[in-house]
Length: 435
Image 1 (cartoon, rainbow, N blue to C red):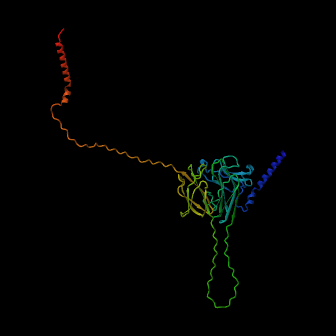
Image 2 (tube, rainbow, N blue to C red):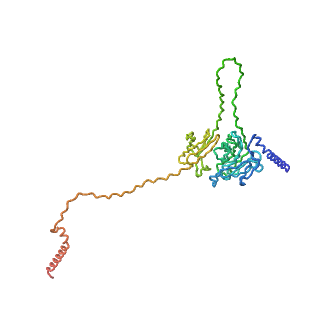
Image 3 (cartoon, rainbow, N blue to C red):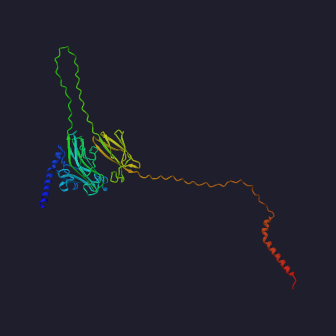
């Protein structure tokens, strides 16, 4: 049993030695004429200001710093070598090393770049193998999130990955397996810049990118073909004749050189509901339908329009000539644009620009109170005027009326009657005989 395991360990050691020995030659074999420095990331790594930023020699890190860093958006990632001898070969395409960068519970828009000298006007082709892992779980074979991978060339040799002069490959959202990205651009100077970039969409626990085996080749600029020279034929000896007047010899008309057709550019557009108002799309910000997009050229002419569609966006405006463009946004009903005014873009040949336009819910309108009528004092009703009556004549002095006299002497009359009755009773009793 012990012998069996010793044989297995020895076989693994031999295999690892072969990997380490052949690693530097793998990229060269797959990409003859490769002009990139350290294309397979096998020639060492070094720290760039901090231990968590360890980048392959010959390459330089870049990242977008905010907005939303405190909330976990657009953070600086950690850069590390992925080592096959330690981590296994799942995330290393060939050899023993790959370049890795990642954030934990955060997003990033970051990568590495390298400047390369080339003949101005030459056609540059660049490719790379890349793999992404975006997940809230620790299963390295499964991703639930969205991670976009790119390779780009700045034909002017600039180092700003956000520049409009960078020609990007289409975004590739494949996860958990190697994909090859490629891009092509014609050098506009004697230096070009190759960018490798990754951008996860959501703040997952694992947002990791792995890049390996870069291939950069260049085709020399075309040499102009010289115009053909007419070869004169044999000249017969003419019979002597009268000397004619000199006829001017027509000049050779130069053959026009073919004009190269410039490569077209592309703009990818989508609109989203910016629920937290930070201007960048987060995991809780869905795509939005119904936003009117107008694409205008430098003369202000509308050359394309589209209403956004959350089911199919981002939408590609393709076949655009190099130049300046404005994007005018009319918000969907119930929303306002987070960006005031038109969005201006400068495109070069072959450029690919991707824009996500933020829309925020419109504030609820404050109801305007109806004007309150000022109460007016009610008019005091005036009594109806009655026709004037004839004045009642004031009676002069005279005898009292019977009614008035009887009322005044009723008591005296009663008393008098009572006295009379009493007197009668007394008289009657006096006249009765005594017994």
